[in-house]
Length: 152
Image (tube, rainbow, N blue to C red; front, side, top):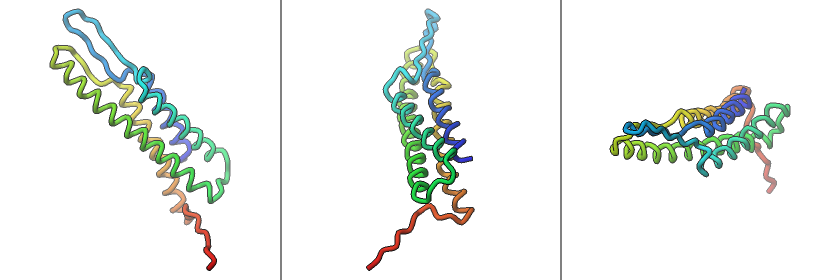
């Protein structure tokens, strides 16, 4: 289940980067401009991290059982990648919101596009996939942290 959530969330994050992240219309001329996330370098970084997280989630999903030493790496990798994506989406969304306010002050009709929201939701779902892996292992009584005995 955790691997599926990671793959679906990453897929949504990638799909959202191809949709408009900002839309603006000039009421005088009726011209509408939209910018998709993929037109900027931040979305490309989000796409790269989402593809890596999906690959890790798919590997963990289809390779059973994941060795104990690999569980830690899988969970940490997926969660860190998803949270980094979310941080980028929040940063870009904040900047776009300021741009929307400036465009509206200039008389344009502007709003943040659906692509940014879909990318944000996708990153949250991917992060939930990593977190769910931790919770599922704790409920089974499996420890995620591999204890290495130290000999003195």
